Image 1 (tube, one colour):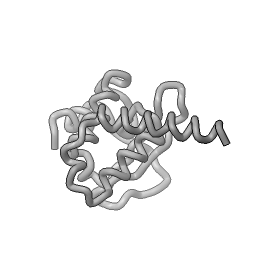
Image 2 (image 1 turned 30 degrees about the horizontal axis):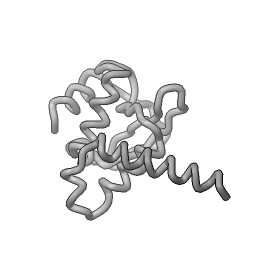
Image 3 (image 1 turned 90 degrees about the horizontal axis):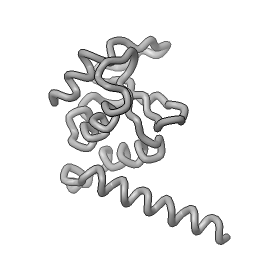
Length: 121
């Protein structure tokens, strides 16, 4: 487990009251960009070691710091997080070599194209 993840788990996400018991090997993650309502996700803990997930957490440290109450927090757009999660769950070996900034750029370009296509219909 990376130093960043250890620091977040031990300094930050101390407890997260839940009405749902998580299976062993799972963790709660709250996702939401600034001024956006957060959504809670159940994730397998093995994702915490993936470089893309570590990059997402590193971005979140800028907003939340290392110490806060509750689940791990990721400050990004929920749709983007779902996109990254889809990539992580895929069997594509290239995912291990992808850069988060490149994925963001590609996702944002695709979102703009969908918006333009939607408005022209």
